[in-house]
Length: 206
Image (cartoon, rainbow, N blue to C red):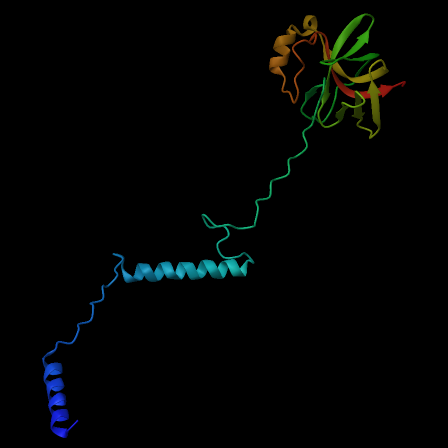
């Protein structure tokens, strides 16, 4: 190619390139949140604090947050054992007991505990802090004030300390007496309520 032709080509290229428009850059859209910059900065700070707290307490980030798939499972609270009184009528603990005395044969049914004497049955009621019921052996264990512990069952001859009354003596019917008393476990409605005896001590010839 001779020099004059090369010069002409370069001259034409310069002319065309000077007339051509440079492609414009696509304008960038600013992403706005509609929130002040301080709010965004505060949210970011909370995320940082949450992650730091998770690491400090040994938890993987996200555990305890809504929707998080953590391996930490809640620990169910252990249930406290339930006291079963069986057929016993039970009153709240009290500091003393009457000094009267009675004796007879202990009778334990599915619903009631009686003292049988001379063909008459007397409902027995017991202080909650000194009596326990064993459903397996159907026996009553009683702790006396002197620390001695006595276990008795149906048919045992027992000597009881404490005190009681009858409707004729007090003028209070069995139903009214039950309403007036404070109970841990009230007597069953099928139990005879007259006479009644509050047990304060137990002795047995078992």
